[in-house]
Each structure stands twice: as structure tokens, then as C-alpha cells.
Image (cartoon, helix red, strand yellow):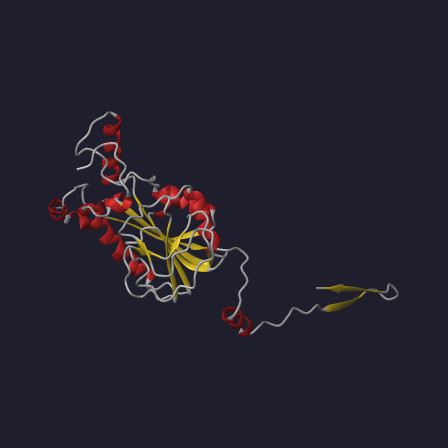
Length: 298
């Protein structure tokens, strides 16, 4: 039971039955998406207990947190020899194929990433924009560090859902001084971003939305027993009200206009047979005798 007006952190909320239910759904969906994303460098921002990159096969994978905005308690610890203060160069991380939950490699601000421009192939943001100081600036920083055609995967709470409605009702009661079980249902740290608003931000940053989906259609219930009883709503929600899931997941690709082909792509283009160049034909048109002649070209 949560009192109205109490600030609920994301890490603490994930220990609740509703948080575990949502985290399990996100883990399954993210694993399917990142499994076929290829490259060399991948980064997850925020939510270290969600091992979103474990199914990815890139040789270098980092997990970063912002200790000033995210709940970093005893359950969260840096990996040995990998923790880096914000502003320093990122380490040469090794293979992180083994699941490492509630641990991280970097400590940095999400709007000032310690990576070079165009150096990452994949960036995963599970609820990171909701906790960022300036979510639009943090998204711009993600665009900076991504290589052309690099991918970003964003996970966030959906304000237009049963859970979002319950959250707004709890905040309203909190302002009225009402305590008890009608307090906030979702984490109160940070600010939720609407799905349509996020798509507009991505378009402004030259991202192309590749896929989007919603999930977690069970009502805003606090106990595992009642969440299990309402499991039948998953299939019903996906069919009849898909955009009202409690959480959304969005995949976008960084597009660069005027990008030149290099490497194998350029060689493949040069190996294609080329058509013969156009040749100017000079035709001599004879005029009347004594009038001379005129040359025309086509």
C-alpha cells in the first residue's frame, strides 16, 4: 500500500507484482528485437536489472546509469573494473553474454554520453527518457552517438492506458490529501511521454520509425493473485484496444541524407555494368547552293 504524495522510484516499483509482470514482458520483447541487430557496439541506458542486451551478439556491450536520476541502491553495483564517472572515456568492455542483472558499466548523464559521434550501432532506452533531465536533449545525444542506419529501441509507460488513468486518478487524490490504496500506482519519479509525442521527436531528429507495439493489458492491480486472474485480457487487449497497453516499445532507425556508400556496398555498385555514355551527333544540313551550311547538334 502506497500513501498518496509518496515518490516511488522505478527500481522499488519493479519489486512489486505489477512491476515484475511488466519487466518480464519487456525482457521477452526486447530479446526478440535485439537478437538480429548486428554491429560492434551496443549500449543500454538505465534500468540495469533488465538485461536487454543479453540476446544480442555484438562483441562490445555496455550498461549505463545516471545515479543522480535513477535509483542506485545496494542491489545495484558496478561490474568489476568497468565503472566510469561521467565525462570520461568509455572502457573497452568485453563480452557480456552471461546474464548480469542489477549491475552496470558506466555512470553518466543521459544527455552527455561519453562516446564518440557515430560510434554505436544500437542504443536501448528502457524507461530512460522518462528519468532524463531533458528527454529531448537525451534523445538528441542518442542520435549523435549512433552510426548511420543504427537503431534505437525505446520503452516507456503509456499515459493513455488503464494504468495511466489510474496514475492520474491517484495524483488527483493525492492533491486532495487522500491517502490509502488510491495513491499512485506507477512510479512517480520522472515524467511519462506519450507515444505520439515521441514519434514526433524522432522525426525531427531524422529517425525513421521501423516498428512499434504495446503490451501489458491487465488492469492496474497490486497483487499477483489478481493479476494472474486477469491474464485473459492480454489476447483481448491486443485484438480490440492495442494502443491502450500499459507500456509501449518503439524501434527507430537513424537515416542520413546524402550518405555515400563505402566498402562492400560501394564495390558492388561499381561492379554493375554501366550503360554507354551518350554521344553527341553532329548533323550537317545542306542549305541552298551558295547559301553555305549550318551545323546542329543533338
